[in-house]
Each structure stands twice: as structure tokens, then as C-alpha cells.
Amino acid sequence: MAVRLEISPSYLSQLENDDRPLTPALLDRLAAAFPLDWQDVGADSTERRMVALREAAGDPLFTGTLPAEQLARIAEQQPEFAERFIALHDAYRRTGQRLEMIDEALAADNAGGARLPWEEVRDWFHFANNYVDPIDRAAEALAHQLRGSSPSPDAQSMETYLGHRLSVSLAHASGAELRRFDPQMRHLVIDPGQPAESRRFQLAHQLCALALKDEIAGVVESARLQQTASRQLLFIGLSNYAAGALLMPYRAFRDEARRQRHDIDRLSQIFGTSFEQSCHRLSTLQRADARGIPFFFCRVDMAGNITKRHSATRLQFARFGGACPLWIVHEAVAIPDRILVQLAETPDGVRYISMAKGLVKPSGSFQRSPRRYAVALGCEIAHAGEFIYADGMDLTGAGTPTRIGLSCRTCPRPDCDQRAFPPSDRAIVVDPDSRGIVPYALE
Image (cartoon, rainbow, N blue to C red; front, side, top):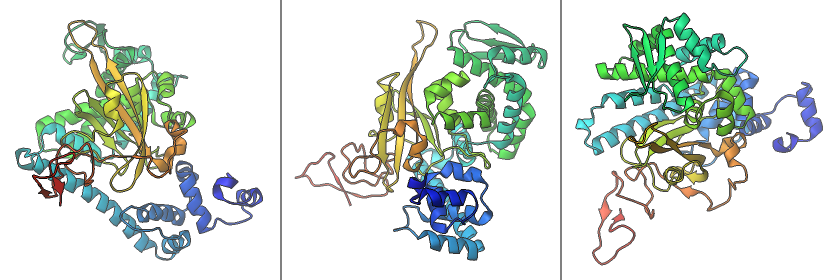
């Protein structure tokens, strides 16, 4: 630790025993070297303000970096200015995301920019940062009742709770639906052809939809969505969210994830969940007093459609069109059950470690084709030490990252060999006597 902080072991020992104070330079190094640990330390408001100010001032939007001593003076001597700068930077990022959404909606001629119900729900989860506190905490409390000494409630405990506490009868029968609940008869049918993890998730979904009905309905009401279908979809989405929080209780899952350095296979074994479920849950760990690593997460089908997406990082997925073809997730779709890792750099200069795995979800019948897709999970390289998939990669070497974009419609790179069409905000120049990878150049 002394080596990482660039101090002597004796100096570190004095800090540990409160014989010497933390200097701004050391505070800056601690926040950079141990971002997740530092937020658990319970630093005072000035130190927290300095760390937030450091992150905002380090945005690629600004050239150069401010010295730690200067940031510390601003945080301590001008606290109101610092708070407003931090809030302004956060508003800037969110406004940029909203403008990009509007721009892409208009470019796609999506009914004049009007959102479809599923888009409205997707955007709601995005601006909630994919974390819904009252439901997450209620599901965590329910998990403590059900799981006993296990890390996660098992199928038997959930079936017992459904029967004894919620008066729901259960049957397993093959059919066209994965799950069917009759609210009048209080009868639940689950397709046994699903993998065990999927059957368990369907149980958890129905249990949460009934046991946490009031909590979920309260969030739906407060969301103020415009369309009836949007509110219904949000109820389903929040029930799925609660199911994930039930099977992977927040603090237990976060603590285990850190112990395992976010090894998805190990987490899936410990909590009895699927690879996709574990990845998705990691992207929701944004509780204010116990944040996890800011991850991005997505699921891509064989045609390149992004069917699930969320990002707590600066990387934001395009709402329309396919993702960047240079991103490793597209290769993973064609290679099931193999984990691929990529160091990528977005046009703003931020580098990410991305892990992707192709998956096949069996249909349970020869008459139905299995579903093939890939999931991807990644974080900024500042958190690489906590992400096992970054081991052995050269994170700082020049020329090593793959230069990706979000989508061709928004990517500003003029020299990409994989460009499918020009960016929506750039004019093109056509020279009939010259031909490159694409038949035009960007102004």
C-alpha cells in the first residue's frame, strides 16, 4: 500500500495511528488507488467534496488536471462553489445524454420523436441510474426472511412462501409461456423446460410481484409515465428488478462481488444465478451509502440489436441503430460459452475494460429454436484492479485500445474502417475520382 501511495511504510504507519494528517496529495492518491474502499471510509464532507470535485474536474472535456492542493483549497475554502460546480457537471452530463436521445429519435424518424412505451420505460430506468432504492431494500429484507444461512433464497423456500403466505398453488407444465399466473385462482404455472436458474427467477418474479405489490405500485405511480402500456411495462420491469434483488441481496452480493473481484462465474455459483442475471445485478449496485463499481451492461442478439442496456459510466449506448461493430460483444455472439476481453477507447478518450460472453438459452423443445445472444459488462480502467477480467492487460500502452464509438450515427471518427454510414451532424464530401473504405469523406 505504501508503494501504491508513493510514501514510506513508516509514514503509512503514522497515518494509520493518527500521528500525521492526510495531505491533499495523499487524499488524491487514496481516492484514485482505492475508489470503492475510500467511499466506505466515511470521510468528512470536505474530503468527499474534494473527491467529487476531482472526478468532475477530470472530465475529458477539460484539458489538463488541477493539482490536488488546489482542489483541496477549493473544497475547503469555497464549499458552495465546489458543490455548484459538481452539480453543474452532473447536469451537463445528463443534458448531453438527453440531447443525444432526442437527436437519435429525430434522426430515426421515430414518429416525430414520440417515445414508444418500452422506450419510455427504458429511459426511466436509465435516469433512475438502474437503482430503485425502496424496492431494492424491500427485496433485501424479504431475502433475509427466506434464505436462512444461504447467500440466496432457494426454490423450496420461495415455493413455501408462495403457498403458505400468499396462498398461491404451483404447478410445472410445458406450454407456450415461461410463466402464467391466474390471479383469481391464485395458481402459478412455470415451464419446466427452462434452465434451473430461469425457473428460480420466474418464482422470484411472481413472489415479488405479489409480496411487494404496494412498493412497486408506489414507484410506478410516482414515475408519472404518460401511457397505460408504459405503466404496465414498468410494473413488470420493477418486478424483474425486485426478483434480481431477492436472489442477489444487495450488501451480500456487493461484498461477495468485491471478494471475488467481480468474477461472474464464481458469483453465479455462489448465488445460484445465471451468467446474465449476475451481470445485470452488478450494473444496479448504485446505493448511495454502498456503491459498487460503475459498470455498463448490455445484451445483444444475433442481429446486433441491443435488447438490454444500462450504463453507470460515461459510456452511453445509442438508442437507435446497432452498436459499434468493433466492440467485442458482436464477436462473442458467434462464440458461445467463451469469455472475450477487450480494452477499448471511446472518442472522448476514456478507456474501458469490456468483458463479453456468448450464451445459448435452450427452448426446451426441438420445435422452438434456442435463443442465442451475448452479454457484455465493463468499467473504466480506473477500476481495473477490482475487475478480474483486466488481469494481464496493458492498460496504458499507446496504441493498444480498440477505438470504438457508440454508433455510426453519433461517432465522430473520420478514419474508421467499419463505418456503415456518416454521423448525423457532419456533412459528407464525395469525390468521384477517389474511393476509400466508404465512398465519401467527412467535412
